[in-house]
Amino acid sequence: GENVEQHPSTLSVQEGDSAVIKCTYSDSASNYFPWYKQELGKRPQLIIDIRSNVGEKKDQRIAVTLNKTAKHFSLHITETQPEDSAVYFCADMEGGGNKLTFGTGTQLKVEL
Amino acid sequence: DAGITQSPRYKITETGRQVTLMCHQTWSHSYMFWYRQDLGHGLRLIYYSAAADITDKGEVPDGYVVSRSKTENFPLTLESATRSQTSVYFCASSPSYEQYFGPGTRLTVT
Image (cartoon, rainbow over all chains, first blue to last red; front, top):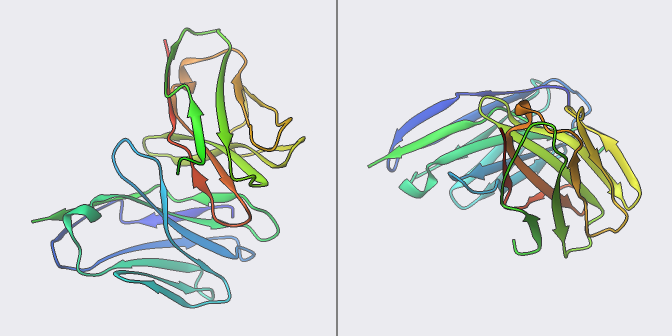
C-alpha cells in the first residue's frame, strides 16, 4: 500500500510476558498483511501472515489480528523467550499488485 | 532458504564504478524483487518483476537498472555507484503473496 506506520520502534519485555506490535495502513485496497522477523545480520523471515477476509490467525505463540475498518493490524507474541529478540517488520500488499510496503520495524528485546 | 541466493555477499566499490548484484532462485517463482535496507527506513522496494522480461519500478529506482531474461535470475546493476547507495540489498522471490528473501549483499561505496 501507500504508507505503513509501525509502533513502537523499540519494545522491551520480561521473559514470559506478552509483546504486541501494531501497524496501521492507508490503502483501503490492501489485502495481504505479513509479518517478518529479522535477526541481526540475517535475512527477513516470514513468520505469519493474514489476508483481508480473515480477522485473526494463530500459530503457536504468535497471532495476528486485523481490523479492516480501522485499517490496523497487530502482532501478538505470548510467553516470550530470549530467542524472540529481533527486529519485526509489518507490511501490506496493495490490492491488484504483488508489491509489499514495509513498516520501519520494531526492535524487540526479551530480557531474562 | 537455499532456494534463493545472492552474490556477492559483500562488496566494496568506488564512486562512479558500475556494480552488478546477482540473485538466483530455484523455485521457479514468478515474482522477484529487489529491496534496500537502511537504518531508519526499513525495507524499500527498488524494482520488481512479475515474470521474465517484465520489470517495473518500485519506490526508489533512481540509479539502478534491472533485467530478467530468465525466470530464475534477477540481476541489479548500479550504473555509476554513489555513496548514498551504500546499503544492504535483499533480493526476494514469490509465487504469489508470500515473499522469501535471499541472504543479502552488503555494499559499501567509498
